[in-house]
Amino acid sequence: MSTHVLRCADAPVPIALAAQPTTQTEAVPDSALIDELLPVLAADSLPRLIVLGTDAALAAVLTHLMRTERLHVEVAYVPPDHTYAARAYQLDTGNSAARRALEGTVEEVPLVRDDTGTVLVGRAKITGPGGGNLAGEAYVDDTRLFTGEVRAMFVTPTLELPGVRASVPRRFRRRRWTAGRAAQLGTPAAVVDRDGVQSDRTVPRSSFYRYHEPWLLVR
Picture (tube, rainbow, N blue to C red):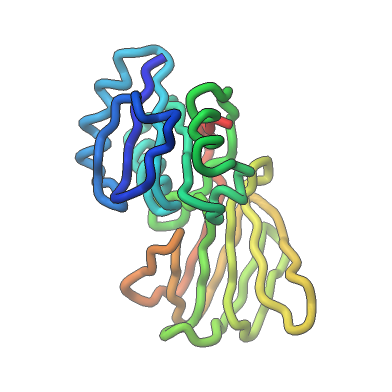
């Protein structure tokens, strides 16, 4: 097995990974740098890439693997803390996560992407312009999530099928998630934050859905 560590920005390097071949990159790795690593990994029939960084870093790696049809690469994630992706995929942090990245087994999990071709690994938060209320109508498969106006809409991937779940805040009530293959929103204007990266313009619609191929998560 060929293992390589992608260290994003100043992500701490656990002791278990100190001796592993490592490439340093920006907080959100550039696709050109990921391309440089792929031939190295391709030299082995079981390539494994270990991502040290934020949810946005993991999402960038998976987005590139999806777009270049390289989802056969095993991906391990060592988050700096209990990020949204760590919770969604039930992952450890620190040295415990690092040991699992080296010794863990691979599991096929749903790959969730949106209508811009960007993978979601942790959480998407959708609001109105300027962080205001979100107006419109949203569905998860055939189930209506809301119509009218809400404070925000949240979307996360799931570890198992169907792959996507969404919710909206409810006053004085525990948040209820609705799961399905796809979550779709129609709105006069919305701002989408994907894994901590906010869109630079408003959009009239947004959808997140399970891709036809899974990704290979080391757990």
